[in-house]
Image (tube, rainbow, N blue to C red):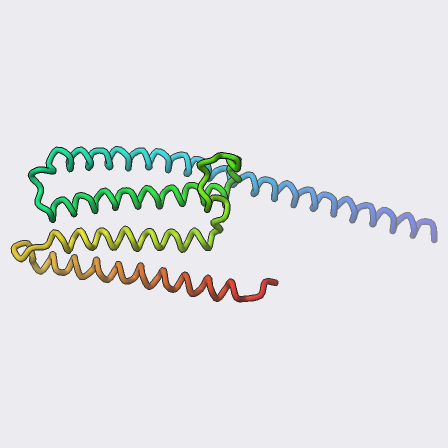
Length: 196
């Protein structure tokens, strides 16, 4: 009876050990699968390069338009045209930040450490820093768009609908600014909190 009890306990322990190994293997396989799924984001970043090419086409088109009409432009028109180029450039910079930081944070590290043109911030921008850089870029783009709209105003073009549109542009710009300030404050609070 004693031998049977020991044999039974051994068999139960073997089954429990096998179940534990099975669950550990299942967990390990699931974690490897989930970790590998990060590569599903890679096509997003490749397509963002295509979007950058599209911005380059629009930038070139706008530059050509400015160059061919420069002599006929008023000073105000020239400033508006240059602001359009700045707007496109800032949008491109925003896309590059998302492209580099997003790829490095969520997919894989870029193996270009020894390249002389590697930006200083690359590999150092975490998700928190990326959020702040993004909101700062969005505020700058919104501000330039708002400035362009105010510079193109004249008394003849002011209508109740246009006034309403400008009002909402200012409100949205202020929301972007408030969001940026709140994100910065939250990051400051979180960075001051002891880690567990």
